[in-house]
Image (cartoon, one colour):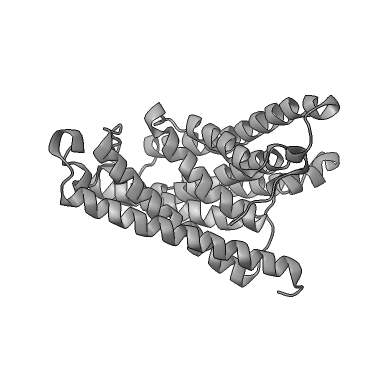
Length: 300
């Protein structure tokens, strides 16, 4: 699978071009971060208020849905000022896709998510990852907690994919190429997560590659939004059901291999990770082929 590079990658960075690269970097990082804050802070405030006032009813969800609808429409080019409408629409790159492209995008990204989960559990056998546990929701009905967890997944999918794979990665791709664009957006993706520590940086960059390659190959963030939502739904429900993050599964609680030795569970995880990684690479190659075929041949 080969990745196209931008014109600026092939040219020498001199004159105006050399000056424009830092400007593009600063603009995309600042804009993407502002979008994340604009989408995440209202969600957090509404959820906190819901837990404090009338927690028996998840009233924050419909309020958040209205806000998210306005938020999405603005990012895709609606609303003032009209002078920025075309740029907003292009940066979001919420491009509709055909059924075959959708199918292979979800297969490739889904296999990538499986490899991520297995890789994180395997990593926790090599180094001790920071624990992640569910906050104390004593006195809050379970129905409200589950409803807010489920609602939080699509919000994160829409907001973060719009910011990182749309407004941030797209312009960076055209300026620096896809690999550098994903590394930069993936690093910013890691920094905005409150549970970020340096040991988790490779994980967040790997997440950015799973979603970012789908967005790059399809020229659309729509499959990445679905994949991100599905991944967050799994993580949120797993956290709710077990009270801890997915990488703290029983197989990874045996301790690092440097103290216990590589037991059978470790080798099983390694084998499953290898199979999932190979399957994901093949699926991304197939997605690249399908997209290339559609770009050559008109039709749905």
